[in-house]
Length: 232
Image (cartoon, rainbow, N blue to C red; front, side, top):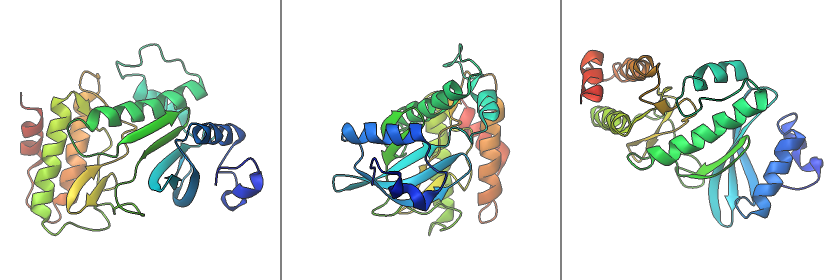
């Protein structure tokens, strides 16, 4: 649970700094979070937990401010037209990075299936759990029954995103959930607008990664897929 006592966090040594604990308490006071439950992923830059708000299970993504590669983050976000005056200050970069992921999800959910973003404060992002009590599997772990149909639906989702003015920017089998044999895109931290100077490179990389993975199971033509997505 989110408590004042640090004794509650001994299981996750060095995962939560003092500032993150204060933000967790703030979210709790705003009734956006009651308790953290189980770790899904404990990484160098971000930790992902299932959490509870009332009887509902959600996802809490907590970026580790002192561990994040903010120089890499800055290299991606500084070309985003939405952040023209971003400085090179570590905390500002990381907080802007998390805010961008939140706003990307808000935009993406208007056209495709993504986790609904619930709240964002500094380095913490709360969002919908895709699944029941546990997250749906990534497509790399559980393949859909009809892979060709799933692939086509994934391409359609990329196309809808692109036509809405957004590019995922880091799409792969690691960032697509298999939810009831339907694709759900996750991890929009590198998502950007189509007017980003690096937009062509990013959409080409998304298509390349997609075709590399699904090409193991179905016939794919990366050039044709890219042409379909970016066609006006």
